[in-house]
Image (tube, rainbow, N blue to C red; front, side, top):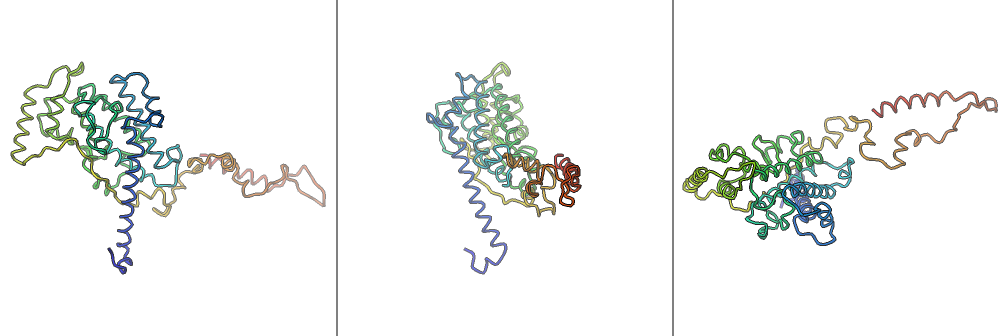
Amino acid sequence: MPLVNDWQEIGTFTNALEKMESWIFSRIVESVWWQALTPYMQTPLEGSPVSKTIGKLLGPALGDQQQGSFSINLWINAFQDAFQRLCPVRAGGHECGCLPVIARLVMEQCVARLDVAMFNAILRESAHEIPTDPIFDPFVDSRVLPIPTGDLSFRSGAQLKNAVGNWCRWLTDMFGMDSNDNLNEDQRSSQDDFRKNRDGEAKSFLFLNSLSDLLMLPKDMLVDRSIREELCPSIGLSLVKRILCNFTPDEFCPDPIPRAVLEALNAETIVERRLSGDPTRSFPYTAALVVYTPLSSADVAEKVAEVGGKSPLSRNASVAQRKGYTSDEELEELNSPLSSIIEKLPLSPTIVTNGGVNGNHEHAGYGGINARYELLREVWSE
């Protein structure tokens, strides 16, 4: 506990604020995870919003390909629900005064958890296995997974890759995730390994991407350790062996796993255990704890006019329309901005001369205002 005199130091005050920010951030992550995402993993109660969503998307009995399409749409709905909780204004398609980077950081943490949870559920022996962990292995309803539980084949790998690609594109469009423009150097260095791809770029669904690559990769290439570390670094050697043992040939990859590949991987596992004890990673996997990185000045520059010495409002003249101010009164005020300043004027302004009214002479000042307003309106609308 800092002494009273320590609070005169800026560093003490800043550290206390960062601890408070970190606690608030972790509460937001937990709230979004449990209230917006977890309900989609469970068997929904009759009449609940999630039940209605699943019933609407589910339709007839699912095949493998239908399950993939259903899962893609279902989890996009789940992400939209999470977005609605984080910022209803932005979720509605408008811009808001809040910092968008906060929502992105929260979703990165939640997606990292979801990645591990789906990975664990897909690699169960069967769909009837009971979930083992309320956070990292919480799936009860296997229908919501992008591929059926235990279905490990080339086709399922391609289907999984397609689902992950759709989710990543949606998350990029809505939150700017997986975009280099939204990461500064400090954030890059603080990202956890499980959210990094082989190029060092932030990447969502690393476990599911690695699994799909492993299922579609020519299996004899897995004997090369460098290839495994490049294409599926998040999957340990013992789990690679388990996946290959349960691999099912299909029309796209009809050949079974060569025995020589399994023997080579088994021999490598034995050598590793002798050299470094037991290097195998326990299954099911666990995601990293919630990590909060204080925002940099670049993160808030878009919303704070003082940063950089230039207000971001000056970059877009139609900021009122862009921010979603769309009530009738506001649109009318946007079309006629002078009406809120100048009181109501006569429809045909006239000049009064010697107590008389001459309807043929318009006030020159009003004509100038109208002409100037029309020119300004053209610039404003650009």
